[in-house]
Image (tube, rainbow, N blue to C red):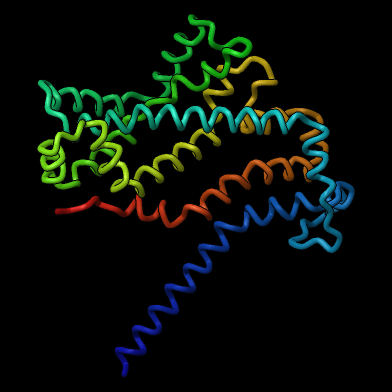
Length: 283
């Protein structure tokens, strides 16, 4: 009886800690949404911040799109995110397959050198990429998108993650496919990609989130405001008079930028969890 009570007490304690942690994590987002629906005059007149509002309004969301060019920033970010993610998968999937299944001289050494790139500080890579992009004049006009996208189409970590997943697929499947005369490309698309779908979906979502939240590189390479991404646009809004004087409208812009990522996670949360926890298919 005492053992049962002990288990019940442990569960209660765990749930209590989870509730407290959830409140701590979600409160900043709640505060952002709350501020976005407050009238500017009411917000400015608050001597003590209020955790609820009796007179919510959506006018701040209208101002977020009319007072600043948030719509353009949003479209730019969608173009950047979709293009970068698609190109990265076109590189990552074949590269992972090559390291996982193909046999060629120096494969292990090549992969080890490839992994060593993860040891290079990001700042050094940014400097090198910046010099290259500037020399190729990919930071001017419409070519700005190329300057934004090209340095982000490879990822050592994602190749390593997918390679490990591919290697967990039994060799017998590959050998049987080769006996049947199946090409490597067809085997990759018909067998390995469907089996590794949870991991691939996870990589796509993580890359999309990474692109959507990207700040340093777009801020460094983008000269014209019309090519700003949402992260840079929000920073420009904050630094402008509008962002400093109208905090509720600023928060409304931040909510609009955050919603796509939240929706994406809600829709694909099961696949994300499956992809992260999946160790691969064992024979």
